[in-house]
Length: 116
Image 1: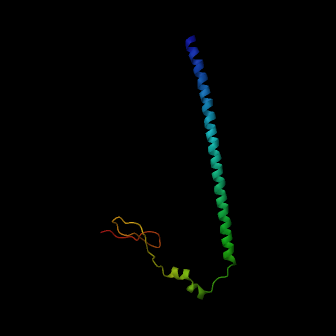
Image 2: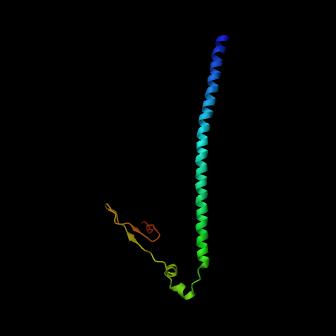
Image 3: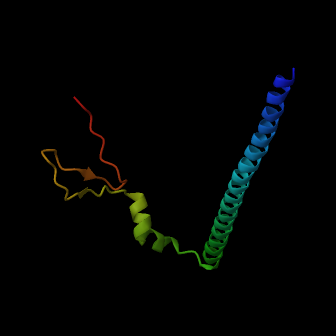
């Protein structure tokens, strides 16, 4: 019985030491991850508050602007562009390697072509 007891006691001691070492190691890792999450949350909160300030400034600027008369609104280029949309195409100067030239519309995408 004593040989078994001599093996069991060191095994239990090693088991306890291993448990404490792993608990210490992973506690440090978890604390580091919590610090990173805290920093990310702080950065996200700063971005949100900056965005709120910018939106508030833009709303204040728009509130102080007098409305344009109806006659000038029709002459404004943005209003004209909204009334009659135009498609602007741009050809890229990239070597085609045997392919047809790429055409990109004003939306940033290539026009849809129906395949035969």
